[in-house]
Length: 253
Length: 307
Image 1: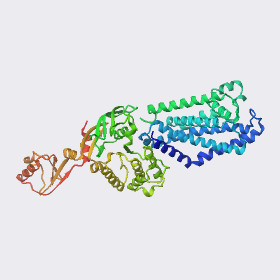
Image 2: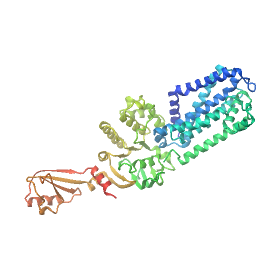
Image 3: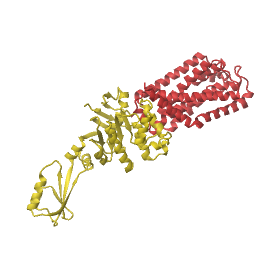
Image 4: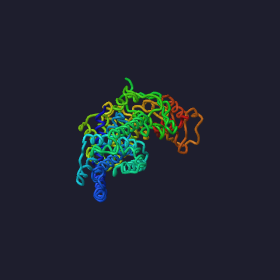
């Protein structure tokens, strides 16, 4: 293993993160605070509690997931797309690094960043609502699993995209709707039966549900099913990345 | 001594159907400066890119320092430093950070002393904390060289290293290349500036339409293909060439005031015969000068002549 290369790539990506701290840290925190103000304080105070959890607290896991998903994808996709766009990818392609080492560097950094942001959001949330975490280890496990999976997914998007527009396409048109419809702000039990059934086809439902279970001990779908679905998506992303490196798709002519 | 790079039957057909390299075989000797000459689109960059792992070969094999670039790519790539043609740099990074990054990427532990030496050699030391985007084009070129040298490569590829750089930087770069060669680094450079190859190279390869049409020691190439021209400034202008001189490759110039003789440098004795014939015909001259063809003339001839 070329650990020096993994470290170099990781550090490079993290340096970018700190350099753009205003955009990468402050922006998501402000956005989340706005959600708390609007959904937690303004609307939440008029809403009944969900499964015995005050609405303001109920949305915290969903908001963390929302940031975790979007930030993982955004960081990882931009991280690998930009060198392709700028041409600096030549150095990585000509370096003695294996695909695994490249993925460890980029995906590791993207996952670190999004976990950090999710934790900052959790800390911010405690300013607005009292939070309890019943299963902290499961919570950390879900955080890691989701961050890595979606960073891999973002990495795939960054490899596939051939323009900045495409880079935004999947997050905007697929991931954001799925996250909003995945129960960030409601329990899918609140939906009419048809929509509830349809929601079960949304992979994000399982992530949010499982994550919420780690906080409050109850969820829309079983924690085992949630975990299994997260692992399936991780396996799919790993397979995609492996295929890309095997074939050199979009990396080498 | 086994070649440090051995390319055998290498071909590349791009997805577009463009056949960029056609069955190329080439050995690079350890410690030499090899200049790859060719017009735009001849396949120079494709060839370098395949050796460095940026482009995948369609057929053929390459060994770098004994390591196959496909199966043992890590060992092969560790030996190589690449300075690309385009000024592709990380705009927001500092010179120091980007050079250290390159060293790590190539699997070496940090060595601030080595990085300092490289930056000083390239007159980049006082810019080490500058962001790359604030540097001029020539400085960015130096940064790319520093990045390529950060991991102490044994082979250095310079793809059009002096395209668009000023004379001072060219001189600096040539000095650096010689210094590296003295340290035992093998250098392969592609260039448009043939005087660069003429000044620097030990051997020259000419590539055209994806084929290597010639590989030769530079000195040998100059000797074999070089031509000399002798110009005699005559005492009295001639209206036409006298029949007595018809056996020589002569031309009249400057309205008959100059006699131009073209001969090869292969060292035949025709020159003596010509002078004797001139004396017999009673043609005197007050001065003469000679000109030897440059590598540029040879190159232009080569690229033109072959069908």
